[in-house]
Image (cartoon, rainbow, N blue to C red; front, side, top):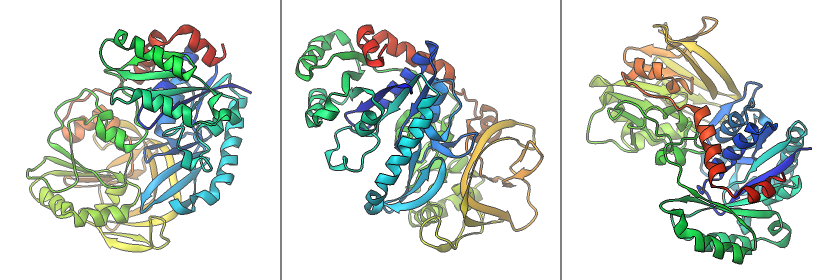
Amino acid sequence: MARAVFVGGTGSNVGKSWMATALCRLLSRRGLRVAPFKAQNMSNNSFPCREGGEIGRSQVAQAQACRREPCAAMNPVLLKPAGDSRSQVILHGAVWRTVHARDYGQHVAFLQEEARRAYRALATGCDVVVMEGAGSVAEINLWDRDFTNLSMAQYAGARALLVAGIERGGIFASLLGTLDLLPPSYRTLVRAFAVNRFRGDRALFDEGAAMLEKRAGIPCLGVFPYAHGLRLDAEDSLSDLAGGASVGGGDASGVAIIRFPQISNTTDFALLPGAVWLERPPGRSFRAVILPGTKSTLASLAWLRESGLAGWILEQHEAGASIFGICGGYQMLGERIDDPLGVDGDPGSARGLGLLPVRTVMEAHKTTRTRRARTATGTRFEAYEIHMGRTEAMEPVEPFAFFEDGAPEGVTRGQVRGTYLHGALESPELVAELFSITSTPPDRERHYDALADWLEANASPSVLAELLGA
């Protein structure tokens, strides 16, 4: 069975994913067989594994940093928020059921055992498993339901690293308060702490780090500077919308993206950092409007009408703007959406925006697969599907693209295009074809190596060796 190292945090957005990804690449560079693991993730940014099933996008990035093919065992439980305190539960990569937050507790024992089963299978073929926690490790009101953080680390016999972010202040209270809340059985797992996202001269915090070490009784792995110029695929939509998707590119200020309440796969827009996100009709026109994916199509369509954006999109179309819909956005551009089984929420139907001659019926089966495709002009790109709807044309149509076997996909009618292919806009060539924007894709391998360098350059070698059990 593999050794395990656990990366937990004093809260959300302190850099756990960055630290875990850096450890993955560092250990891989040392010739070890490494795999990432997160027992439960909550995110609408997901990706299909080639073996089948979907997992959180951050675990995909960590698998790439390990130079491994992503698999469902790396993220056995994925919660995809669907609004109204409901989440679709993905278990071992496949849809299990949709659960209301108040009912989730009754399923925890079962899901915990399934997560442990996935961990055992993953750890059997590795030297080291890098485990990532969720949120804070000291959410004491959730401990009876938390199988992602220190209870999972304890099960795996992991050595734990506690990460705290310093850029917003409160580092002493967050670190020492977190440790003070842990019971002895959890507290002994924590072997070191890290001060992350420091800006300025780190020598100015030498005294602060020493004070933390004395009070905490554990060593500081390091004071890690804010990593400028590095990018990782974001774990959730909030990270991307807050600027996590920024990549060098051309001027996308003429492109608007609708920010649905249940937006999904915001990683689709990594090459459009200058695009404008809209939650209400703006006082200007755009040359292109994008309707992204959403976890709840009917609810998002209703919101689109209530916000006034539905009428605004039609006005933009009349004025000559190109309209592009992905997945749920594609479904909304059609004539009608029917959900007789209630897989998208409550059973119901709704009239679409009527810009494409298609009709969508929601089905219980979920399509998750990677794809290679080309446009009619010959532009080739890689993409993936994650959807539960079946969309059919109501009249002869021009496809958006063609798969390798020649099968058509999506619909194009004039300046309106719809597709199920997430990731299509991660192709610089396709972005140039659709929006006349020159963009630069992230060099993921370079970023993973730079993260490992960042970790190695700022970590205490002796503390790092003890943490890793080396």
